[in-house]
Image (cartoon, rainbow, N blue to C red; front, top):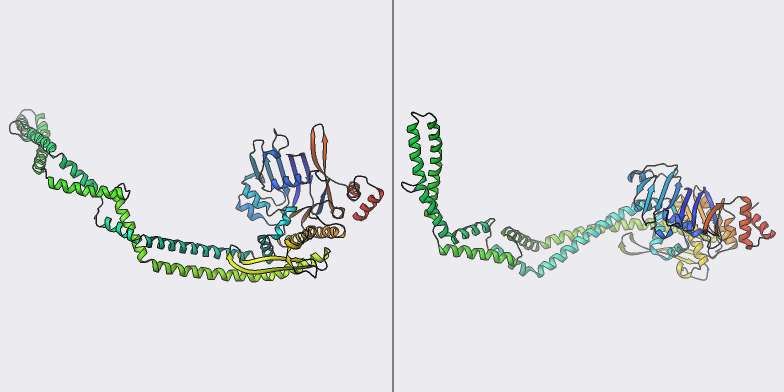
Length: 552
């Protein structure tokens, strides 16, 4: 629960440094004094979007920090999962906003993403403002209330897994059906493409080999001329390099009888002679094989033209891409041929997944139906005690299509009079009645969820007198069960039942306007409640009335 709150440089607040306590606390103050500013600061602390306009002094950063006691709420897992230091007795949440608009969040001095801060805040504080009364007519909220009271987290998780699997199977089936429909429509075209490529009998590396052969044949005369020249230089009688090397070798071998190093020279010349003799034979052989064949060149060019045409037609850069395309087309045609079998298999998977999903939806619905009876009983008891003796409250659960949360459609029906049939709450309940319904729901939910801190922002709208006192008693009871309840109120009946009383005041001087909040002592509290009773002129009767409300 919230133990301490520090607000610095936030809108009208220079610095607010205040402690909070267990049980039921109230916050009062005139309209416009700054109560909503404090709520806004807490909302920012709990992960709401930040705006640099909320900084009071533009040259300084805004800091909002809160200390929470988590010792009774077993939240170690959250901190371990997010690699955050854990201190059950003093969990510190801080939000900083710089003049540049940059926002930073910290949990126990560990920098965290805003999403992590929001996730933690959902387990720490529930702020109920007046606009939240609009939730009463939203089916998602009504279903969430039923699920909370049903305590069906495990069943809901099982259902969501089975629903996700069902949706994935349906998606795959739809994709296959679309593919089959599209492929069937293109079957003739696909078959034509495959036949054309298949009948081309393309082979890997063929294009490179043909291009090389075409280049050789196109330059056959030049090649033959140069080979003849090389052959003449190497092998001609009398002047050829091979014959000259042989003569040099003979001379060196003869010289070796008298000059020892000449033998090594002879060996080296012999080595060159052997290599050049082999080279000369290769050149001679290649010269004999080099002939220009116009028919062969024409055939090669025709084959290359076909390859180039196919590459251009099918937007491929190489023969390897054409071969890969042929294989893909063959697979597509095979898939079309075997599509009935694949379709039947997927349809079976969808059917089985739907069956499991519906089984889980049925189990979930059964538990929700039981919870609906519990909600009706508890709401009737609470609403009767809040001044509606003829109230009727019903929870209807109708079956619809399977969806992300099951197939149940929940409606809260309400009637304040015996003569009027129950109808959706938002259609028949007045503002004061909706406030009482929402308080009753919040009391019921808080008991099930065990939220550490609940803040009510003027939930007493539209009520007064004994009804306001009874609403205060409900909040007081909520605060007596190990929970912290804070109510922002304009009603003395509610303010009087708080175990702790704070007052928000707005002051103006030459430096500007400032809001502040203080913890009232007993005498200050008497005067504040007396002022709420009688207005700015506090009479002795108002003082006595305040004392009676405070039971002093």
